[in-house]
Length: 470
Image (tube, rainbow, N blue to C red):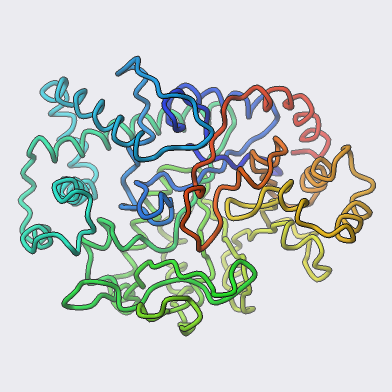
């Protein structure tokens, strides 16, 4: 089925509390997607944000970030409207409100909380991890006192109020998210969720499964870290800092660590996008002592063995392979062996005469969360480049180059066509979600003020979707 959708993180939804959440604004967005003839909503990971507020360095692969908790029914308090997300202020305020609410209904919800903990094994280690992390002023787990570091090995599951709070919050967050997903599905909207290939070092995943990663025996810090060598994003490559998996152990254990992560995400989303798919074929192994990603080596991963098991255990889960970057042919062979759709990002491929734009089993984008919005991309073009793009798009509807490229995107044979909200609204580089391999005060902070401009464009978008049988 051909379909189109919008790429918009939950965090970027309009909100009275400084960040998008699982509340009324999200339900309103679902209604607007339906009005515009869209059938897909692509989001970024919902897990607790870690280093640099990045959703790709989360504290957990299973927990949801309490930043997304809809607190409208708990308080009348609002934050001053801003064009960017102030994570620290919002996290402090929400935690304050949520802990008070928990204490007010702790007794009433106790049995329900225990039931959630019993049904969701991951929340046991998560609640202990977060209780200790807050106790240690949110410091990285490998710097905690030794008794806290090793408490995972002799945990009896005792629920102190501080620990029970962490379980309660996850229970409520899961209830809110599943209600939103159910509403989206009832309205014909499927949700594409993004699953990072790696996990953050300062995470419950690593703390509770230390033998599953290449860590120093004494310092517990990574001996090797993840990233990619120099490419079109960065001359030094991208040094992500995530610890490398112990693939030998994974294979002995039937890949249960990664399989369980994907099963958890498959229950949250309708379609799963596997970030950094190429690492299932080969991954870049960087010595942790190297300040850039220039040093390293490609290591082969047991991708076929893993996906053979995955396909048996998650038969109905639809998967998108993020196959971007300079890849060896074997990555595409692996992707096609399991019939996963890959990605066509027009900012990269439009001028590539060798790229197969006629392929149907593909997801087409103008740009992703790592790209400059199209208006910023055009602004950096030479006049000669602009002339080439305009000539190539001459027959497509629209007054601006951006409008024409949206029409072109929707016209492609690709199974799915996804447009970022910034490109729908014609916003520039100042609204870029992320500049890869850079830590700054702008990454992940953009959010919508309201839906007014989007609503005004819906009739035209609906017409385009209909014209291109989306």
